[in-house]
Length: 267
Image 1 (cartoon, helix red, strand yellow):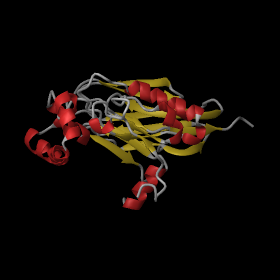
Image 2 (spheres, one colour):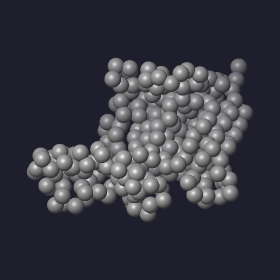
Image 3 (tube, helix red, strand yellow):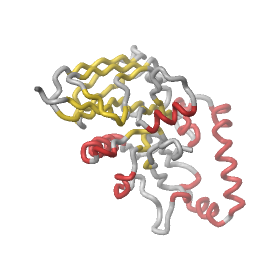
Protein backbone atom coordinates (compact mmCIF):
# COMPACT_ATOMS: atom_id res chain seq x y z
CA UNK A 1 0.00 0.00 0.00
CA UNK A 2 2.79 2.42 0.87
CA UNK A 3 4.57 1.73 -2.42
CA UNK A 4 1.32 2.25 -4.33
CA UNK A 5 1.05 5.73 -2.86
CA UNK A 6 4.67 6.51 -3.63
CA UNK A 7 5.83 6.65 0.00
CA UNK A 8 9.65 6.78 0.01
CA UNK A 9 11.67 3.84 1.38
CA UNK A 10 12.71 3.84 5.03
CA UNK A 11 15.85 2.78 6.88
CA UNK A 12 14.62 0.82 9.87
CA UNK A 13 16.60 0.89 13.08
CA UNK A 14 17.93 -2.55 13.88
CA UNK A 15 16.96 -4.37 17.06
CA UNK A 16 20.34 -5.63 18.17
CA UNK A 17 19.32 -8.64 20.25
CA UNK A 18 16.39 -9.97 18.26
CA UNK A 19 16.82 -13.40 16.62
CA UNK A 20 14.50 -12.10 13.90
CA UNK A 21 17.08 -9.47 12.97
CA UNK A 22 20.07 -11.78 13.08
CA UNK A 23 21.74 -12.83 9.86
CA UNK A 24 24.32 -15.53 9.07
CA UNK A 25 27.12 -13.21 10.21
CA UNK A 26 25.66 -12.83 13.73
CA UNK A 27 23.69 -10.19 15.58
CA UNK A 28 22.64 -7.10 13.68
CA UNK A 29 24.20 -3.83 14.68
CA UNK A 30 22.13 -1.10 16.35
CA UNK A 31 23.22 1.52 13.81
CA UNK A 32 21.95 2.17 10.32
CA UNK A 33 23.53 0.37 7.39
CA UNK A 34 25.38 3.33 5.91
CA UNK A 35 25.98 1.48 2.65
CA UNK A 36 22.20 1.57 2.03
CA UNK A 37 21.68 5.17 3.13
CA UNK A 38 21.43 6.59 -0.38
CA UNK A 39 18.47 4.30 -1.11
CA UNK A 40 16.20 5.65 1.63
CA UNK A 41 14.48 8.90 2.53
CA UNK A 42 13.11 8.04 6.01
CA UNK A 43 15.10 7.35 9.16
CA UNK A 44 13.61 5.45 12.08
CA UNK A 45 14.21 7.67 15.12
CA UNK A 46 13.78 8.16 18.89
CA UNK A 47 15.10 5.10 20.58
CA UNK A 48 15.64 6.27 24.15
CA UNK A 49 14.26 3.72 26.56
CA UNK A 50 15.76 1.43 29.15
CA UNK A 51 19.00 1.18 27.22
CA UNK A 52 22.55 2.50 27.45
CA UNK A 53 22.75 3.29 23.74
CA UNK A 54 21.50 6.85 23.38
CA UNK A 55 22.58 7.83 19.89
CA UNK A 56 19.99 10.44 18.90
CA UNK A 57 22.62 13.15 18.50
CA UNK A 58 24.62 10.98 16.10
CA UNK A 59 21.55 10.33 13.98
CA UNK A 60 20.68 14.03 13.96
CA UNK A 61 24.11 14.63 12.46
CA UNK A 62 23.49 11.79 10.02
CA UNK A 63 20.32 13.48 8.74
CA UNK A 64 22.15 16.80 8.28
CA UNK A 65 25.02 15.20 6.40
CA UNK A 66 22.66 13.22 4.17
CA UNK A 67 20.63 16.28 3.17
CA UNK A 68 23.75 18.31 2.44
CA UNK A 69 25.61 15.62 0.49
CA UNK A 70 22.63 13.89 -1.12
CA UNK A 71 20.31 16.77 -2.08
CA UNK A 72 17.96 14.50 -4.02
CA UNK A 73 17.57 12.15 -1.06
CA UNK A 74 16.45 14.53 1.70
CA UNK A 75 15.76 12.62 4.89
CA UNK A 76 12.54 12.64 6.90
CA UNK A 77 12.06 10.99 10.27
CA UNK A 78 9.48 8.68 11.80
CA UNK A 79 9.07 7.45 15.36
CA UNK A 80 10.11 4.07 16.64
CA UNK A 81 11.55 2.43 19.74
CA UNK A 82 14.79 0.84 20.79
CA UNK A 83 14.07 -1.29 23.81
CA UNK A 84 17.07 -3.61 24.01
CA UNK A 85 15.94 -5.59 27.05
CA UNK A 86 13.58 -8.49 26.50
CA UNK A 87 13.43 -12.30 26.21
CA UNK A 88 15.85 -12.11 23.26
CA UNK A 89 18.66 -11.04 25.57
CA UNK A 90 18.57 -14.45 27.25
CA UNK A 91 20.55 -16.88 25.05
CA UNK A 92 18.51 -19.91 26.07
CA UNK A 93 15.22 -18.21 25.21
CA UNK A 94 16.58 -16.89 21.91
CA UNK A 95 17.80 -20.35 20.90
CA UNK A 96 14.47 -21.93 21.86
CA UNK A 97 12.57 -19.40 19.75
CA UNK A 98 14.72 -20.28 16.75
CA UNK A 99 14.48 -24.05 17.18
CA UNK A 100 10.80 -24.43 18.11
CA UNK A 101 8.23 -23.01 15.63
CA UNK A 102 5.36 -23.66 18.07
CA UNK A 103 7.09 -21.61 20.75
CA UNK A 104 7.63 -18.80 18.23
CA UNK A 105 3.90 -18.76 17.50
CA UNK A 106 3.06 -18.55 21.21
CA UNK A 107 5.64 -15.82 21.73
CA UNK A 108 4.28 -13.89 18.74
CA UNK A 109 0.75 -14.07 20.13
CA UNK A 110 1.90 -12.85 23.55
CA UNK A 111 3.89 -10.04 21.95
CA UNK A 112 0.95 -8.85 19.85
CA UNK A 113 -1.47 -8.91 22.78
CA UNK A 114 0.87 -7.77 25.53
CA UNK A 115 0.62 -4.05 24.75
CA UNK A 116 -3.07 -3.76 25.62
CA UNK A 117 -2.67 -5.88 28.76
CA UNK A 118 0.35 -3.92 29.92
CA UNK A 119 -1.38 -0.56 29.51
CA UNK A 120 -4.45 -1.82 31.32
CA UNK A 121 -2.69 -3.27 34.36
CA UNK A 122 0.51 -1.26 34.64
CA UNK A 123 -0.67 2.26 33.89
CA UNK A 124 1.54 5.14 32.84
CA UNK A 125 4.56 3.89 30.82
CA UNK A 126 6.73 6.88 31.74
CA UNK A 127 6.12 6.47 35.47
CA UNK A 128 7.65 2.99 35.58
CA UNK A 129 11.32 2.63 36.37
CA UNK A 130 11.63 -0.40 34.09
CA UNK A 131 9.03 -0.17 31.29
CA UNK A 132 8.10 -3.12 29.16
CA UNK A 133 8.92 -3.35 25.48
CA UNK A 134 5.39 -2.89 24.10
CA UNK A 135 4.69 0.09 26.35
CA UNK A 136 7.87 1.86 25.30
CA UNK A 137 6.91 1.42 21.66
CA UNK A 138 3.42 2.80 22.22
CA UNK A 139 4.80 6.07 23.59
CA UNK A 140 6.36 6.93 20.21
CA UNK A 141 4.29 8.89 17.68
CA UNK A 142 4.76 10.08 14.10
CA UNK A 143 2.97 13.30 13.16
CA UNK A 144 2.14 14.25 9.59
CA UNK A 145 1.22 17.79 8.55
CA UNK A 146 -2.05 17.91 6.59
CA UNK A 147 -2.64 21.67 6.50
CA UNK A 148 -6.29 22.39 5.69
CA UNK A 149 -6.87 18.96 4.14
CA UNK A 150 -9.15 16.46 5.85
CA UNK A 151 -7.60 13.52 7.67
CA UNK A 152 -8.03 10.47 5.45
CA UNK A 153 -5.88 7.50 4.58
CA UNK A 154 -4.96 9.11 1.25
CA UNK A 155 -3.98 12.51 2.70
CA UNK A 156 -1.90 10.92 5.47
CA UNK A 157 0.00 8.73 3.01
CA UNK A 158 0.52 11.69 0.68
CA UNK A 159 1.94 13.75 3.56
CA UNK A 160 4.30 10.90 4.43
CA UNK A 161 5.42 10.72 0.82
CA UNK A 162 6.25 14.44 0.88
CA UNK A 163 8.33 14.14 4.05
CA UNK A 164 5.95 16.29 6.11
CA UNK A 165 6.69 14.52 9.38
CA UNK A 166 7.72 15.08 13.00
CA UNK A 167 8.21 12.55 15.75
CA UNK A 168 7.60 12.55 19.49
CA UNK A 169 8.01 10.28 22.47
CA UNK A 170 6.12 9.78 25.72
CA UNK A 171 3.58 12.38 26.81
CA UNK A 172 4.93 15.08 24.52
CA UNK A 173 2.08 16.65 22.51
CA UNK A 174 2.96 18.61 19.38
CA UNK A 175 0.57 21.31 18.14
CA UNK A 176 2.13 23.66 15.57
CA UNK A 177 5.31 23.88 13.50
CA UNK A 178 5.64 26.49 10.77
CA UNK A 179 6.94 26.19 8.16
CA UNK A 180 6.00 22.54 7.90
CA UNK A 181 8.82 20.12 7.10
CA UNK A 182 8.82 18.88 3.52
CA UNK A 183 11.10 17.46 0.86
CA UNK A 184 10.18 20.50 -1.26
CA UNK A 185 12.52 23.43 -0.78
CA UNK A 186 10.97 26.69 0.39
CA UNK A 187 12.30 29.74 -1.47
CA UNK A 188 12.45 32.84 0.73
CA UNK A 189 14.76 35.68 1.75
CA UNK A 190 13.90 35.43 5.44
CA UNK A 191 13.08 32.57 7.78
CA UNK A 192 10.59 32.59 10.64
CA UNK A 193 9.99 29.41 12.62
CA UNK A 194 7.13 28.99 15.07
CA UNK A 195 6.65 25.95 17.29
CA UNK A 196 4.23 25.10 20.08
CA UNK A 197 3.66 22.05 22.25
CA UNK A 198 0.92 22.23 24.91
CA UNK A 199 2.36 19.26 26.84
CA UNK A 200 6.08 18.62 27.01
CA UNK A 201 6.65 16.21 29.92
CA UNK A 202 4.53 14.08 32.19
CA UNK A 203 6.35 15.41 35.24
CA UNK A 204 7.64 19.02 35.55
CA UNK A 205 11.39 19.21 35.08
CA UNK A 206 13.82 21.43 33.15
CA UNK A 207 13.80 20.88 29.43
CA UNK A 208 15.57 22.35 26.40
CA UNK A 209 14.57 23.18 22.87
CA UNK A 210 17.38 23.29 20.32
CA UNK A 211 17.25 24.71 16.81
CA UNK A 212 19.87 23.58 14.31
CA UNK A 213 20.73 25.26 11.02
CA UNK A 214 22.90 23.19 8.70
CA UNK A 215 23.78 20.96 11.65
CA UNK A 216 24.96 23.82 13.86
CA UNK A 217 23.16 25.03 16.96
CA UNK A 218 21.70 28.52 16.40
CA UNK A 219 19.21 28.77 19.29
CA UNK A 220 18.89 27.01 22.64
CA UNK A 221 15.96 27.73 24.95
CA UNK A 222 15.55 26.51 28.53
CA UNK A 223 12.00 26.11 29.86
CA UNK A 224 11.51 26.07 33.62
CA UNK A 225 9.79 23.17 35.42
CA UNK A 226 6.80 25.40 36.17
CA UNK A 227 6.06 25.90 32.47
CA UNK A 228 4.47 22.85 30.89
CA UNK A 229 3.81 24.38 27.47
CA UNK A 230 6.62 25.09 25.04
CA UNK A 231 6.20 28.05 22.70
CA UNK A 232 9.08 29.06 20.48
CA UNK A 233 9.64 31.69 17.78
CA UNK A 234 12.84 32.16 15.81
CA UNK A 235 13.44 34.84 13.16
CA UNK A 236 16.38 34.70 10.76
CA UNK A 237 15.88 37.80 8.60
CA UNK A 238 19.07 37.65 6.55
CA UNK A 239 20.29 34.07 6.09
CA UNK A 240 23.15 33.69 3.64
CA UNK A 241 22.22 32.81 0.04
CA UNK A 242 22.04 29.09 -0.61
CA UNK A 243 20.17 26.09 0.74
CA UNK A 244 19.75 25.78 4.51
CA UNK A 245 18.45 22.96 6.67
CA UNK A 246 16.58 23.77 9.89
CA UNK A 247 15.58 21.18 12.50
CA UNK A 248 13.90 21.49 15.89
CA UNK A 249 14.91 19.09 18.63
CA UNK A 250 13.69 18.59 22.20
CA UNK A 251 16.11 15.96 23.55
CA UNK A 252 14.50 12.54 23.90
CA UNK A 253 11.05 14.03 23.25
CA UNK A 254 10.62 15.63 19.82
CA UNK A 255 12.37 15.97 16.48
CA UNK A 256 11.16 17.58 13.27
CA UNK A 257 12.03 16.42 9.81
CA UNK A 258 14.21 18.91 7.93
CA UNK A 259 12.75 22.27 6.96
CA UNK A 260 14.71 23.01 3.79
CA UNK A 261 14.96 26.66 2.79
CA UNK A 262 16.48 28.04 -0.42
CA UNK A 263 17.65 31.66 -0.13
CA UNK A 264 18.25 33.37 -3.49
CA UNK A 265 21.32 35.51 -4.06
CA UNK A 266 20.85 39.26 -3.97
CA UNK A 267 20.07 40.75 -7.42
